Structures are given as structure tokens and as C-alpha cells.
Length: 295
Ligand SMILES: [Fe+2]
Ligand SMILES: [Fe+2]
Image 1: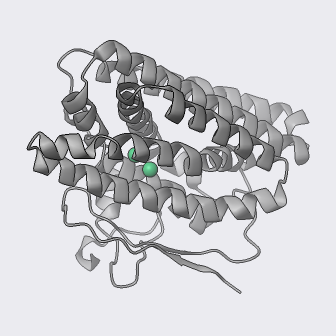
Image 2: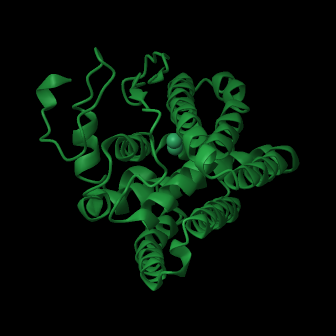
């Protein structure tokens, strides 16, 4: 049986549209969906593991200030925020289904899921409303930096990988580009303190990288790839390249007067999203020719 996953949630905001995309995961979906770069698949799986915990936290953080935004007569921003919430909800629900397949193969990852739940629950309950909104904005800055890096290196990373998991990760990152401004605008509206933003963004970055590392090592231990020097050469090389590419982008977002719209979008992802077919809830494979006329 092939489970069909579709999440219907229309939005009226054209700037942050909701795509009812469908993923049909075959029962034989494997966690090693990238034969030539299993370490990359493991890192993506580890990132995916955190989405059903991190994204509900940022959603709750933005939703908690929606009434204030409405009361401050900023209806456009409130509408953007609602559309942003709808997109993020679609993301983590699809990741949760994918994660079920991965954790069935790697039960040890369930312990990491419990740690993720504890970490984000602690932030949600113990930190201030302002910190939570700053975290959402910082989380988005990290996601945008990652999307830009992956966009420019997509052929290197995804060539030879299975189509469905590749589509999940690239679609998610492409929509992160699309809503890059929203959480930042919400944070600016309700708080705007740069120091808090820097601390929250650093927290988001450390949490994401720590849990990606833990999840990746857990999978590579089981497959014994952890004892292969090539595995470590690749992981360290990707880590260094990502750090040098993403950190300057993230740092720029903390400068006074900066707005995420000042940063150039990656070139391919926004074009690819335009080829989404709303009738079928599908998007062409990432390496297929883009036919914008089909949207
Ligand atoms: Fe997302
Ligand atoms: Fe996002």
C-alpha cells in the first residue's frame, strides 16, 4: 500500500501561497535514499527529524502575537503571518510522515526525537514571548541561508538521489525562501531588539546543528559508515563550506537597518516552485526541465 499524503489548507495571501503538495511514500522507502552520498541522506534525515518539533514552536511563537498585530491595525502583516503558519504546518506534517519511515529503520532516532521534544518544549514554556518571536525570525534566517547554499550546490548534493525525498527537502527549502520576510516582520513589529535576535538566532543555529550531528552519527553508526574515513572527510568538508557560506548571510540579518528582502533569493528555487501543478498537487522532479506554463 502506498500512503497518500495531502494537506489542504487554502490561503488568501498570494505572497505566501499554500501548496497542497502530495507525497506518496512507497513502503520500501529507505533511509539511505542517496546511494552515492549516504552521509548527505543521513544529515537530511536528521534535519527532518527536528522539523515536527522546531516548526510547531515557531508557529506557536508567531501565533501568540497574532492578536496584538490585529489590534495594532496591521492586517496585512497578520494575513502574511497566517499564510506563513499554514506553510510551516504543511512542512512539518510531511516531515513527520517521512520521519516515521526513517525511525522504523533506525529506532535509536526515537530517543533523539524525545530530546528534541524536551528542548523545544523548554524554550516554549520558559522563554519570553519576545524571545520566542525572535527565535522564529532567527530560525528563518538559518533556513534561508541553508536554502541559498543548497540551491547553488543542488546538482552536487542531489544528483543520483531518489526523487521523492529530494523533492521533500528541496520543496521545503524553496518555500523557506518564499516566506523569508514574515517572521522577521512579525518580530520587528512586536519587539525589534537586535541583541535578542542575535541570541535567538544563535540558539536556533546551535540547536539545529547539534541535533543534525546527533541524528547523523546515530544513523551512520548503525550502518557502520562511521568507520569510513571518506564519511568524515565529506561531513567535515560540508560543515566547513556551509559555515563559511551561511554564517555571513546570517550575520548580515542582524545588522541595524537590515531586512531579509535585502538578500537576493537563490535563482532556481523560486522558478521551480512556479512549476507546481495545483490540480495534481505535484511538482516536477528537481532535475526535470522547468515548465512554468504548467502552473
Ligand atoms: Fe518550514
Ligand atoms: Fe520557515
